[in-house]
Amino acid sequence: MFTGAQISLYPMTSEFVPVILDALKALDPWKDRLRIETDDISTLVVGPPEVLFPALRDLFVRAAATRAHVVLHATLSRGCPGEPDDPMCVTGALANPDEPVAQRVQDARAAVTGAAPTGEEAAAQMSLYVMGQGDHMAEIYGCIDFIKASGVFEKSKNFCTKLRGDAGPVFATVAEAFCRFGPPEGHVTVDLTVSANSPSKV
Amino acid sequence: MFTGAQISLYPMTSEFVPVILDALKALDPWKDRLRIETDDISTLVVGPPEVLFPALRDLFVRAAATRAHVVLHATLSRGCPGEPDDPMCVTGALANPDEPVAQRVQDARAAVTGAAPTGEEAAAQMSLYVMGQGDHMAEIYGCIDFIKASGVFEKSKNFCTKLRGDAGPVFATVAEAFCRFGPPEGHVTVDLTVSANSPSKV
Image (cartoon, rainbow over all chains, first blue to last red; front, side, top):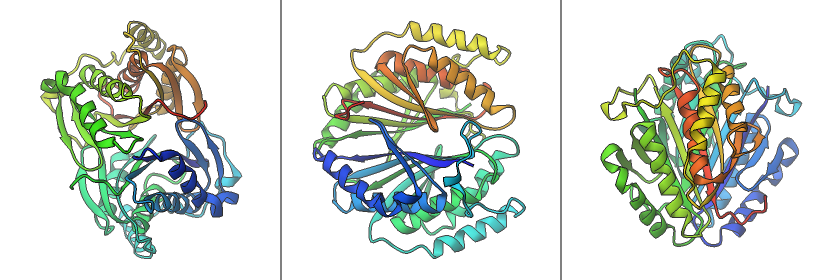
């Protein structure tokens, strides 16, 4: 299994460089459990979901705390057949493949209920993609059912689902969607956008 | 068939609002062939690929011309089983399903060769996702073969492929990838990031 994300942080301020460099310090407590590589478009973060999602949450919260309008985008992936197995990615976070969708929805809801608030509000949207064999839409609809009951659901949109709430449960919801839907050994990706401090009226 | 994108433009400047509002004027010549809806996270653009990609290119080029560091992100989708057919999306741009991958690679290369330059350089990365039945990795590997021969290939990365070149052939390459790989009636998505004027050294 290979799990990780290409992430980018977009601060809508002329001081974007210091905002990014400061926010990256939020990854320090997680660094010994992640592999991190940066280029001019994105930063690769490789590691298990139980480290990856809290690390992204902390990065977002630190950037949001500057009060600038900031957006974090992540292209998340697990189980891509083109990537090598990596011992760094060993995880206990994926759902039991024998569990029916309804049970996984219930377990995911319970996990989000326990997520600690961060004090920063996040507006987010995500698309879950399940590749390969099986009925990929059944998994996607199950995931949408979970998100609607997560407490941070805002609305359905074309191509994605929109969330809003404290960044704690928002990132926990994305983590549960990523881990519990689609087969544990399958190829699952998430296209995630998380925004703070937007001046746009909702 | 339902084809479109959720797009967001991120200008890394404190003047981001006027940059976004001005760039959106680049969509005017395309508006009668697109449906456009905006909220605080993204703008939905629905229409056929032969309108969608030139419209996104023009939006990007106009924003890049401000010389600010700007990033365009698009979540592109065609054929999602959860979306209704839309007459607005009728297209002649999708590949013949009976064509072998090698032929589609060749046709896609020819199409990119004819793309007019815009004068703006773009650094981009994209992931192609092919859902549902069949060997999705064969289509993805075929698409990667095409991108490597497109003239704007920069490098392979985990989870995505990186492009660099004039925005004309870069957007044409993404359009060909989206239209010619994965079954014409299938569910295909692209996670696309395009960046201009980054201060980061490559």
